[in-house]
Each structure stands twice: as structure tokens, then as C-alpha cells.
Image 1 (tube, rainbow over the protein chains, first blue to last red):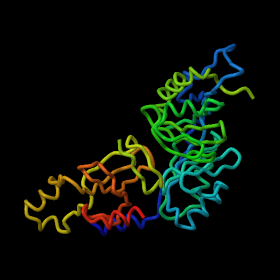
Image 2 (image 1 turned 30 degrees about the vertical axis):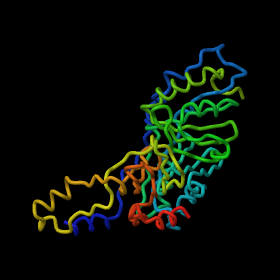
Image 3 (image 1 turned 180 degrees about the horizontal axis):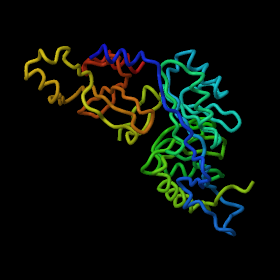
Length: 221
Length: 105
């Protein structure tokens, strides 16, 4: 039996890669499409914390051996981003590459480019690796404002203090009774990646947790 | 609450992020067909339940999702060390004070 397994391992990798966006003119609905509609006239100009969804972005999980020079070169050639160190994130323009585990990274970018990016990663990578399109499986929430950290402190057991959570750090931890990948983008800017099936729960939790800090929708530009 | 050091994330995290997965360092018999029923039954079903030093597997379920080992004193609940899969524990005897001094250093 082990011979058959070894033969299978040595076979060239064949993966069915497909464009997951429908060709027909179908309206895309994000996991929070039902809850993020803003009623005109309710936008607060001075909120302590802002919460909004960055809907329908590209989410790709990349797995491979961080110790392999070929792998890190391939990822960099395809994405333009270096593999980040432990609990860090590389960013350039609209794309960000976050450390999730010693052999796993999360690439987030513009919504319509998942297929092109996946093809370009597969063209650059070779050997034992995986690229998985998670765009439909999770969504990106943004939390900003002077009181954003207080909302997270209420929701996570993780230490959100500046000395433990500097700008640029990425941590996957417990948020409410669910989980989230928390990325500190700036002093008062946070991004949360949550599972689509928990998105509504986390959204409602944050709306409630933010109430005492005058939570408002997207920060006025 | 335990405050566990994940050797893969390189940080202490709350127990909420982890799940225990039982006794560590079990090895599957090399020749299952050659085992007696008793040997195979021991491997499948029977685990130690010591009072004192215990090596356990834990998984960082809500973090990096990696498995690792923990050496724990089941009497005092003290976490003595955590170490990666595939490596050997440094503390194997609770009474050997030298060992825990080495780990702390």
C-alpha cells in the first residue's frame, strides 16, 4: 500500500482552478449585506468608533514551507509581497499578506482579482504547496476610531495594549465567543477577518459593544 | 485558567484558545498484526492518569492550529514547559530541581 501512496505523491499536481465569480449579471451579496445598509441621515460625524465591512474582497490562503527559498521567492514574484515574519503582515497598495501559522499565510486584495492571483501564484510555485480561495468563506470588518481599541478589549482575551499589540501585528484569537484574525493597521485602525457564518454574530456583538462609545458607520472621508 | 506559551506563535495565550488532546508521546506499535490483544488494547484505550508530572498534547485551536506538547504538574496545575511536536521533554522528573532550573534559565 505504501508504494501506491508514494506513487501518488510523486504524480504531478493537477488542480481544478476556476473563476468563482458568476459570469452572468448576478448581484453579489456579502455575508453582511443584510445588516450593513445605512439609513440616510444616521451617519454620525463624531463617533468614538466606526465599524464597516469591506465586502467581497479576495481572500486566498497560501500554504507552503517558509524555509524553502523557492517558495518564498515564488510568493514574492506573484504577489509583490515578502513572506511576513511570525505575527506580522506585509502590505503594498491594496494587497496584504498576513502570517497565520508557520506554514500558512492569508492574502487579501481587491475583490475581482482572486482568479488572476491564484493563477499567477500557481504559475510561480512548485512542489508541495497549496493555494485556496477563501473569498466566499470569510469577510473583512474594519474597526476604527479613538475608542476602537476599547471595543476590542471588551471582546478579546488577548492583550491589546500598545506594548503587546503594535501597529502591523496580526493575531488570530478569540473574539466574543467566535474567533477573528485581528490586524492592527494603524494607531486607531483595525481589520478583523471573520468566518462568513459568524459574520452576523460578530457584527451584532460589535454594534452592541460599541454602543457606549457612540458607534457609527464608516468614518467620513 | 492556564496561560500557555505556544511554541509556534512564540507567545503566551489564554487557555480559551487551546484544546487539550490527551497523553503525549504514544507510539503506535510497529507491527499491529503481531500485537497481542492486550498490547493493542493498551495502545488504543488505556492512558496514564498520574498525580504529578504529565506530558500532554495540546492544540492551539483558535490560533495557528498547531499541535504541541505541554509538561504539566496535575497536582499543582503548574505548566512546567511547552515544546514542539517531535522534540523530547526537558523535564522528566518533578523532584529533579536541576531540570526546572535549566528550563527557566
